[in-house]
Image 1 (tube, rainbow over the protein chains, first blue to last red):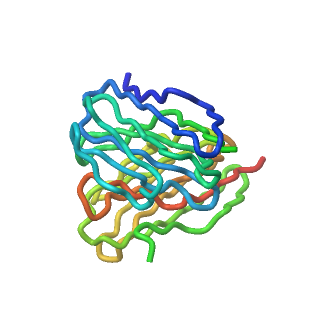
Image 2: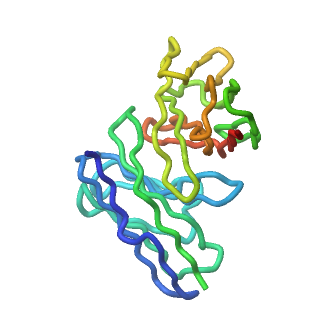
Length: 111
Length: 110
């Protein structure tokens, strides 16, 4: 079965910490995405990657960076976490023109 | 204007009711359309893709109107288990750029 795995289900960090969110997919998908989901705002695209080492900014890239060194792994990095980055983070992957598969999400709290 | 807009919720309906959601999109070149279902504190999961000719899956019917740039989801004979948030998904300006509506919350009551 298709699988997108996010490394942590819940994470608590302090303001100013560097935070890594990891995502791994086992479907050999070329496209991977990071979204955040906030009540009333829906899912907003942070970054996506269409190939190894390739990335494009989404709607809200400020305060985030990403890394895709291997096809199966897409990492989201918060260089200096802030309280307004408290959110649910969802990783997803897909092939071109096909449906998205999501990981189970990481609820990040920044104190 | 948002790229993808959905009916504002919440929708509260009795069991057995028929309910319809609409979703409009701004990019006339969009190619892929989907409805996802999201349960509370869970990840979104694909409910159904939306095809140009419309498509049905049991009690669920999805339609696409390219001229008016909207898609719809019809749920017949609502069940308690249909209670969830329904997300409209459209590919954006770039082929691999999927954009979500804010979601419509449905509650089916006994």
